[in-house]
Length: 174
Length: 143
Image 1 (cartoon, helix red, strand yellow):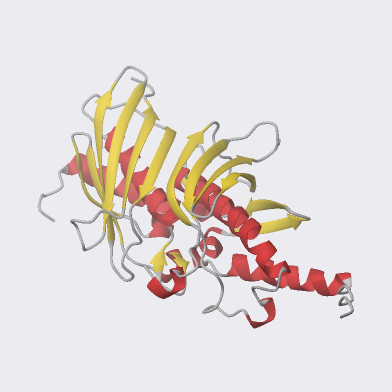
Image 2 (cartoon, chains in turn blue, brown):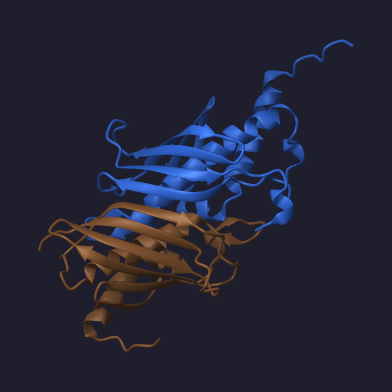
């Protein structure tokens, strides 16, 4: 049998963009905080779009520590989820065109998450990038760093452990 | 509410509930004093992490825990004038039941010249099964 012709690049790209959008739009809390995600090839950058409601200390003013923690954790989960799902999408195991809210795969679940606060979070946009140390069949470890004006001066860093989505997760719920 | 808030506690309540992000989350200070604080977070659809099951996002719980731990530090008898989080670790036991208020209780159990140590637990209406626990270290400033 003749090998199937490779798909045109714009088709592949469209499919990836659609999958990517579904990933981020699926989390109401991420929208509440104003978290968006940018993709350059396989590198993801979380963006925390500044809003007054993210302030924790009105006198400084500074970002709320909980917002920073949530931003790091969300970036870590999304980066992990993207790395996990992309090969499945490419292999055709997940049909992006037919993805609905009900059929989108489960996200990894946070087991624990630790944040170190290095500097005050200034009242402006922030960025975060995550590195997956290891993602096994059940557990994953992810490190994440956030910065504002200068990439070399992170204002927070975090590390977390996650439970990977299990094949029959969707049936057991929880 | 089991205890009547005294004036300083009323001030703390107003102070915490005036934090812009605490208002956005809908946090309510229930009790505060002697290095202990209790803060509740009523269920809101925009705090959901997965719309399929309606479970509140862990990040919202960690924001609640961070606020509660900070409040516990500020009301400790060796109270610092101000505090900032050095680090905070959250362990997630289970997803909170959709529709239920999540309540965090924090205890500042030790304060040194420079560091305050705190632990906290969050539960929903199933109070015997914690949703999450937290441990953290906070700065001690301006004593």
